[in-house]
Amino acid sequence: MSEAAAARTNLLGLEKPELEAFVGALGNKPFRARQLMSWLYKRAEGDFAAMTDLARDFRAQLNDVAEVRTPEIVSRHDSADGTRKWLLRADSAQAFEMLDCAFCSTAQQGFNRNLTTAEIVGQVWLANKELGFEPGGERRITNVVLMGMGEPLANFRNVVPAIRILLDDLGFDISRRRVTLSTSGLVPLMYKLAEEVNCALAVSLHAPDDALRNELVPINRKHPIAELLEACWHYIDEQNGRSVTFEYVMLDGVNDQIEHARALARMFKGRPAKLNLIPFNPFPGTSYRRSPMPVITGFRDELIQRGVLATIRRTRGDDIDAACGQLAGRVNDRTRIRLGEKLAGAMAS
Ligand code: SAH
Image (tube, rainbow, N blue to C red):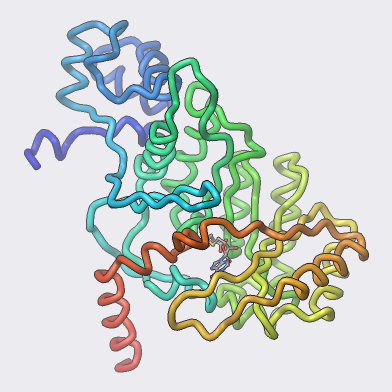
């Protein structure tokens, strides 16, 4: 990569005020930022040369210092049920951190690095185009969930601007109830999130008591359930939100007994909460099993009977390993090697 290319600013990473500052620094009026956003998000145009209502000089300037770059598609997988999944590549920088939920395939792969704002927005931008968006045509992306590989709140600095671009009426203009951030429960950052953006919140609960949650979601040892719930209710108050969605992965013989459902019902009765029961997606090397379907429906019925809104998440893309972390887990030898090193390191220490 040439030096000039390395220094280019990816416009997909800039919120409106930042884009205004960027075009301002190039000697242009702030309204140029609006025009640019309109090309980028309303017309899905990534080629400056095609932005015909911008002055030729300005377009030439943009070509020198800016770019519209999405992550690169490595492979595309289409499920019989209509689910489509892309394996994307960013660059290969790395870091060191992991959250370690016991049942999560991604956590078993270790951590490479955080995505940038442009890489988060770029995924939506890419999907929108791949799904055949036409300028002036129907919306292609109506819902976004930040719950893929990793922990969105651990990347607060990049995730918050990305959410703002998704919500901005000059950006993707997605409804605030249709952009959902899912967290394992980084409590202090949940309070900070409440101050910074207005989107829907999902929380990975997975157990009705601290003893079990400590085991399944280790962050619970730092921020136990009572503290987590306080942060949830605070978020709803601050945001005038309707409810928090609590994710609960159904693990055979672990957290799927009727007593667990009753404990959850005591916890949530009269609260602005929805429970989303997730059939566990197995992956190589795990000892957990998915609860049988009759157990899952029985669990849901028990909750509903006790006045708690509960649904079962429809599992999609099973035939293409589209569940969280499965695809990358299969192809990403590089991270597997790193995890091996990490385990070796942990055993040595
Ligand atoms: N770290 C964030 C977001 C990533 S996980 C969080 O914990 O919320 C997104 C959701 O998928 C979470 O509810 C997570 O617990 C769930 N999940 C992870 N591994 C799973 C598996 N193997 N089967 C089913 N759901 C899983």
